Length: 143
Image (cartoon, rainbow, N blue to C red; front, side):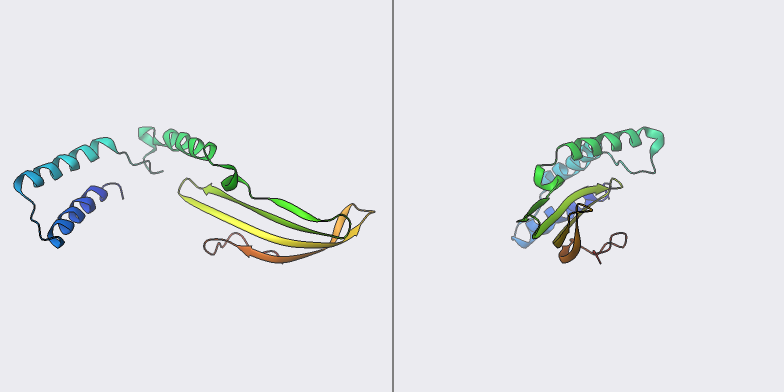
C-alpha cells in the first residue's frame, strides 16, 4: 500500500488541476517527481513479512507507543449504576489494536437483578445492548 500512495497522490493532484481548468506545467510535473522521490525516502513499510530488516521490532515499538497514547475513553468505557441489592446496569467497552493492523471496539450494556447474598453475585443477567463497528467472528454477543 505504501508504494502505491505516491502514485495515487500524483494522479489526484493532476485530476484536481484538470477538473479546475488548470494544466500542470513541466515545473509542476518536476515538483511531483521530487515529491515521489522524497516520499520513498521518508516512508517505510512495516509489514510482518519483512522481519529481516528489523521491522518486527519497529512494529512492536509503534504498537506500544500507539497503545500507550490512547485516551481513557478508547482504553476502557466501563461503568455501573443502580440500586444496591435491587438492580444494576453494567456497561463495558473498549477499543484495542489487534495484530498490529486493525482497531476493534466493543461495547455492551447489561441489566442485573436478583442479588444472591450467599454467593455475592447477581442471579439474573439480561443483555440490553451490544455493539461493534463491524461483525467480529471471534466475539459473540452475550447470550
